[in-house]
Image 1: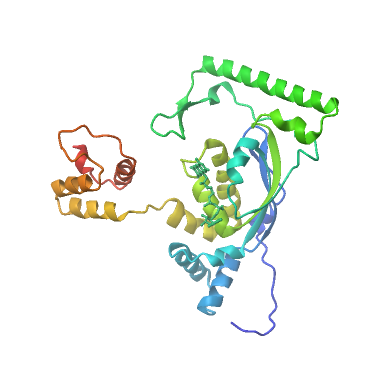
Image 2: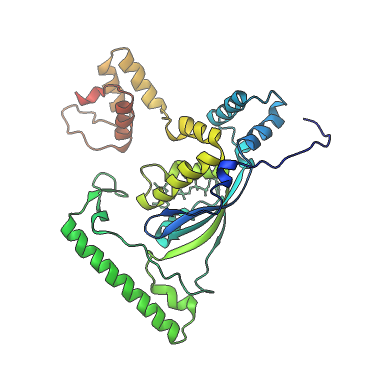
Length: 309
Ligand SMILES: Cc1cc2nc3c(=O)[nH]c(=O)nc-3n(C[C@H](O)[C@H](O)[C@H](O)COP(=O)(O)OP(=O)(O)OC[C@H]3O[C@@H](n4cnc5c(N)ncnc54)[C@H](O)[C@@H]3O)c2cc1C
């Protein structure tokens, strides 16, 4: 590092410049667009080299450095990049989104302005069934006939809620009070600014299949359409080392070691010690979340599940 004045050129990412301000449609009436940004893959590399010393600036080495930082969770260089979005999102999705505290937010005020006259609608084939395995999730869809009725009732509810809201405004009720019965499907808009490190954390949680479908739609666009253009090397490393990576616990490692040794009985005994299987081999096997998570990982790795056969 040198303290001498050097000529700095603000990084400009052409691929992102091309989509600056252009909205990506999300859900039926939502959108997300990039308003501004700071930094690029280069800014991550530049910041990291302050700690590692100036090196060669070949692209392949920049890629290697970014991948090293991502693998080793050396996170601060990623905080050198910032991005500002303008989003239009239903209030129930926004409620999940806003839980991410490491962003800067300014939201449309329904105290100051009349609420946006748009609510997210659900087509007959989009009504999801409650999942049985995961209390927080959905699995499969309702039949088309029921879906038609539910969509009609949704339209009635949204129409009535809006009508009553506008009646209150017309009667002179303050906007801050008139809004209280608007449905959570009502769209809101916000400016949302976040650094790349915290954005990747948001994406890891909200692109994941455990996140609700609606917020996943937004996260997918941020990741696949925006971050991939903005910082392609970071995006690639994120997919390889975070999003599509798999973490093994100590318990799972011990099981794999037993399976590798061909010792199926020892693996089953370990699972009993972990409390994943009943102590009494003749007792029925109950559901166990951690065991099921381990089974999913073993399936992904093509490792035979010792207690399954
Ligand atoms: C699938 C899923 C299900 C969820 N279910 C629920 C639920 O049922 N109920 C519910 O209430 N929430 C739920 N959440 C929200 C979740 O608990 C988090 O609040 C949300 O995902 C934000 O994550 P975060 O705090 O890591 O992110 P951010 O707020 O962006 O923070 C990023 C990181 O900064 C650090 N940080 C930020 N603020 C603090 C602080 N004050 N102190 C210490 N460290 C801090 C932490 O390391 C944190 O991980 C769910 C989230 C997901 C993805």
